Length: 243
Ligand SMILES: [Zn+2]
Image 1: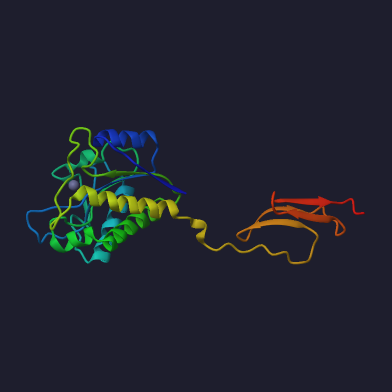
Image 2 (image 1 turned 90 degrees about the horizontal axis):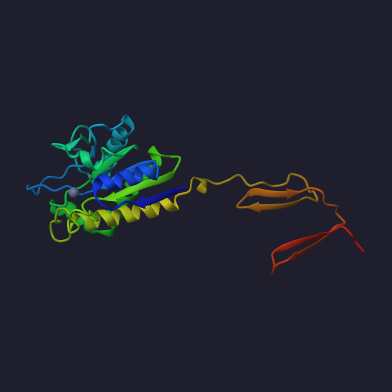
């Protein structure tokens, strides 16, 4: 019920493509960086023009990160509107749908950089992102993803900040987003058990039941009718001309 599409090109172009596709929500993924290796807070950026929904979604994501990774909340309750002195605003302001820019952990922090490089840390980040989308956009539909820095037409070699100990921001943001895409596209609300349909009295009806749910029923059957299931062609023959 979710479909995730990655948008590439310059940031404004990505947002306009997502508008055209009528995405239900838009996420750009970064990792933060600071000259101080101690910086360790979790923050989400929204545009200056962001809706309340974007802000609440961003706060909720930042809070989940803070709890799961034991990182303090940055900004105001985890939110930095407009980004750092306006940096980040242009990454989101052209979107028509709720949009957030994630800065969950610091690439410059040695402990957090290890988390970012580990499959376990990536899975955790991906699940938190997917869960926040499922919570705020329960009706599913198309979600737009943008990997920060990577795939820009204007600066194709940009990969963002280096990770302390090796690697670069954008490559890990992409890994996390790919994992989140896979979680979202596998998600099914019907994984909730369905009450099985069981006939209360013996009848001559013929039913087709899939995973406990009745798909088709035929009631005009006599107990003398002959039923022949052809397993090869998967056809059930009903013959009332008993001989
Ligand atoms: Zn970045």
